[in-house]
Image 1 (cartoon, one colour):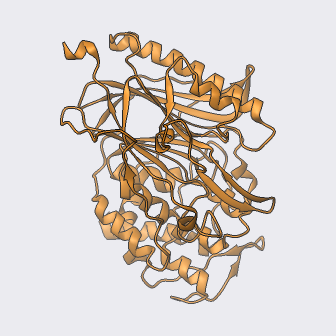
Image 2: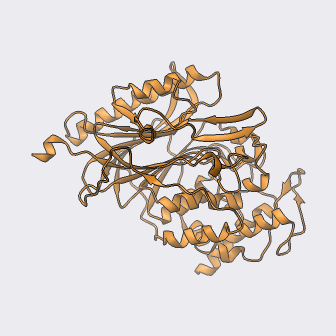
Image 3: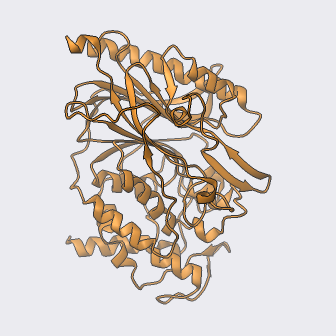
Length: 448
């Protein structure tokens, strides 16, 4: 089948929202229908464009975003080809550890600058994302060495589409700003702007139809683990369950092992999950263990979050101990990076557990403070019917004796975020992305 025909078929799938929308999916069923193009979103917002005739109704009475013709296919050219040609993976089972996984063959890579241009063109009617600078921690001299280049890590709760539109109740954010046909471009624009080597995401409910194929085309390999009882499945017209995703750049890392965890509290399985992967850096030959998680939300669940954190730390100790034996490195040389939406302020017990862990973890974003001891004032800022919430819930933890933080992305000001807070027309999630550049510290035995 030629490229034009493939694009045409996929674009027909993308137009499904004008013919009845997505189906409700079970936790083990990947979504395979991509969202509609940006022109469709504009037609829905304005009531005009390419054959749009105003709001349609699904058989059940729910409104459907009308699909215009116009410039949709032109805007989505490269992405359409990517989404049509990329293979769809199945999620790994819980608790399975699979060293030396057999990965699919590398897909043909596309130009990230071209995808970024498509994102910007699709978002030309929206205000620009807040400008953020990469800053060096206080007292840190910028480091660069061809034999030990930095590793860029991004952590982000991207806001599950079903929750944003159907459950979270962002009363100051217009529903049009949450429309997936355009919001996905804002998310991808943020990722493409920084092109991390390791990308840790939470609340992902468009893994199979968006993030996996697009990031695979950019040279990433991804893993996804859904929550067993995702709240997305309670929302009509959902796109499947949400969960955690971990992507890494295949030109930089070799995957050594994966552990998918359903976190427990006092021996009882909970609804929260974590992915832990061990890599070998292809530049330095050093090993790195990375984890992504999303702990239980809401006040009143502090003890459960603490127990989930304890379970994750215990698993991390076991996995890194096994890695040390396999790597034949001295004890203490397998560094850790743990990313997540912990749903916990620094005053909570789960934060204290990580901060005082025998694993020697420190929080990257404390390094923004003058004394290196204080977290930012917020990583999420939203307005719901219950009131305004400005909290620090998201973290990147790292092994401070083995890793050095060279730079990190600063936090937008209140003025940049705006009076209606997050999400908004100019930012796609209620959580800010966190990003840092880290490097391996030289070890005494390597200097001899």
